[in-house]
Amino acid sequence: MRIQKAWFGGLVALAVSAALSSTASAQAISNIGNVNLSATLPQSVTVTVTSGSSVTFALTENAATNGNVPTVIQTAWNVNPGQVGAVTLYGYFDVPAQALTDGGGNNVPTSWVEGQMTTGNPTTYTAFTQTNPVGPAGGSLSLFSSAITGLNKISSRTDNLDLRINLTGQTLPAGTYTGVLRLQARAI
Image 1: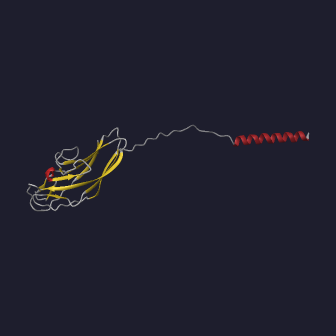
Image 2: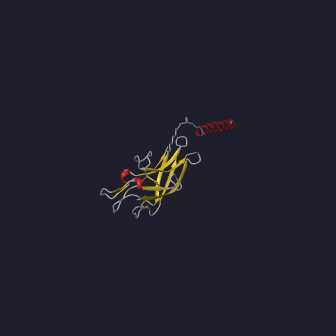
Image 3: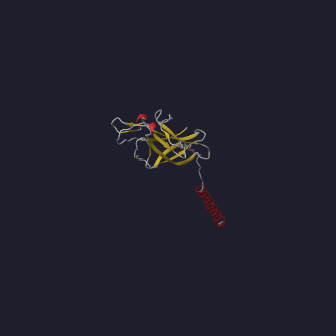
């Protein structure tokens, strides 16, 4: 009987132990929750003047005078070649009749201001008299155009823009003339 009780007691202890361990290791797993993600990086084009943001001219009557320093321009872009065919840089003046002014009614028109970018479109000095998508009609100049492919969809370039004021055949009163050349790139 004692053996039977001991055996029965051991069996009960084993059953309780098994019940407790199966309860302790029982797991419950939830359903799977989903989070949908979406990220957009917009296309971008930037223009930075890295040096030559202030150009001076020592004008000479009836002559073309180069600026004292080139304007160094970095143009960078990150665009989709399926949506953009080219990145183009333009220079322009807000008022073509007044690229520079002395503030007293005497002006240097854009037709007297010339630019050249040997790594761009006007490899020789060309007046800011074009009509382009930026700036006013007759007051801009296309400086370069870079076709976009899968190889250069993320790229940049640095160019020197040389400026001059051409007074050949012109009359301009003595004075100090100031103006602002604007630079803008477009991805089209």
